[in-house]
Image (cartoon, rainbow, N blue to C red; front, side, top):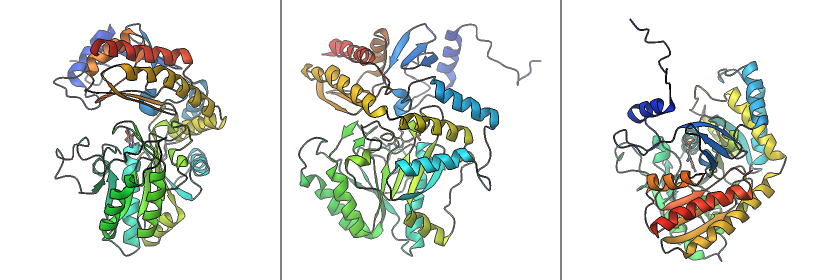
Length: 436
Ligand code: PMP
């Protein structure tokens, strides 16, 4: 009889485990019946992804906004190894440790100066759940339990857990599929006044009207500051946040910024809210927090939020892996790398090179818009991208790029060289030529 706990792999060639994957594993947003092709990953160094098939690809995605310093980074490796040799995990209930305290101290010193308390969460979505709970508990503690709904933006994205999904765009967030599961929140139109354009005050009118109409039932507004990520890589005017801050203050509504994608330098500021200088009451961070090494996120709140909740009882959340020391240690190492302060020049260089490489694509008939902010570049087409066909061409041209909807976008590690950005842009052009 075979031992069911024995190592079953015994794969003699990567094509065998790739085949097992195809039959048995879900990947993000895929059907097991009709999955998009997956490429077999072997390893990654710096900005280069090595496939098991032997190809070497320039990484245009930073593993979805995370690997800002590149892969297999000696200082991040060192911090991880050092911590794992000391201790990988310990419960955070009743015990605390230096990596978590140091990380919280760093986050509070980097974030808006009005934020004072930190909740360490295990993923971006969870940090959003915690932010929503904070807002609801805050008004319960104030004796205003009627203020329990949120206002969010169309085309916004905040994660895949139920609470987070309920504040994602109602269409792309699949609210109809989970209608009975999700609370009904209020949605304002996507801001249309672009980053870099002259401010158009009418862009805020509908948001103002909705806030005035619903303020008695609203505990918070949640939005991604400046850049809507998964909802369309859309960059909007900083003045929108200034207007929003003023009306939230006037109507006693908390302001939550989801900086999970935008945080840690990606937009050209350490955090995107800095473009507006209108600070939030609650802020979530994640993704690049550990430099892409491990899952970790955090929810930061003002002393008023923390103490008001505290006055009525505990904040009701406590994940098993809260404050995981290994994740905190590598996050501290990643933030130390950021504090070397090379990132502003790196992001500016990536930005300039993407402007140069992507802007000319506006000449293609199939291209509707090209936009670049910081180390984020997007080419919007007039049609949905055929992801499988496009990726085949990207891989053949030495690039790792994962489009979605009508968007082909780049967010390479900050260390990407001019030559590497040029490779990414050339791969995109190779695909555009096949469809134009
Ligand atoms: N908020 C934003 C703005 C995001 O981009 C994401 C992830 N794409 C999340 C929340 C959810 O984070 P996670 O995938 O770590 O749960």
